[in-house]
Length: 206
Image (cartoon, rainbow, N blue to C red):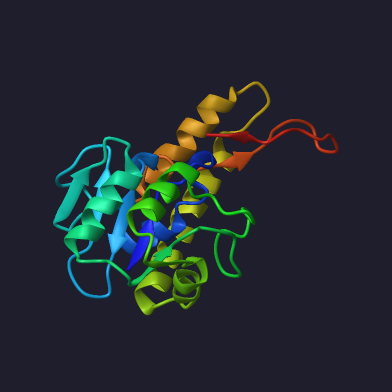
């Protein structure tokens, strides 16, 4: 069984594994999941029930932000005792979570699982999922093509709008409108900077 806890890092940076496994996490919401080899996948969000992306997971529960306890409850329902429990993002990997070499799992959540399953084998599952994510299906490639087209519409809007004296928020608004009209979702993380060429600026994000 693979267990994913929510990212504690900035702006969803390390939520790729749980997003890949569940497709949940709209609006950067915190997501956790228990993904067994056999049996139903269970996910947790701040509020349970149906979410826009939950078209294949029927068991979505409210977390109460007690992620370790939630995972333990589900693992016991699955009859886990001495089996192997893989924790995604326990440490940095070759394919995923490379920006967090020490991992990004909450120590408190991990300890709750360790205490409850002292006879289980708890291992890092970062590369188990990372290697699968690295190989792109035809459907994923189609999404990448679509997202590139959406981003290009935002770029075109920036070129058409950005002028000396135009506030950055107006340019950003035009870009987001163009991306939404092209089928994008609100709001992507956008790293950019403005000002005269040749100077160094911190990038403006979201």
